[in-house]
Length: 187
Image (cartoon, rainbow, N blue to C red; front, side, top):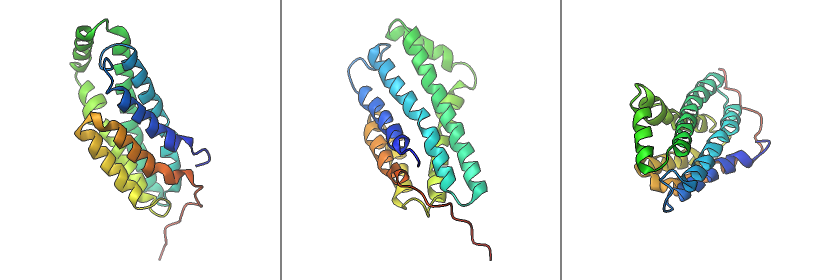
């Protein structure tokens, strides 16, 4: 990666969000909510260059493109969810109003699967495929750490910070300059 910062900064900002959400008052429409979600949004956006770098390291071009689209779709859905959360945090006057606003938004048909349940999982799936497909450019343990981190964070959002640290370890090899993408061997 020409600039290694996103590969480490993206997961660390998500870890910061995870740490902030454990603080008292951070789950209400106050400064903690807004600061945490701003860190999450920035971390998610920094995954764009990470995904592009992984795509560059994949020899199988079609697989790399498909995985990039899948991961990008999930990432866009996660960004959308975070923007909704930020808006609710700004618009709500108290915890009850926050619940009411979330209820109104999530009652709109399609909002839950698009922004909260189905499409966001595509980010993790696409990221895993990209890491596996870049097997000559990243170590085997990178996708295994991403898988472990994803399971950890899905099991309990209070484990986002340890999961994000696993993501940072998994993506650390992207800070090393990559060789040219390997071409598939044609027999």
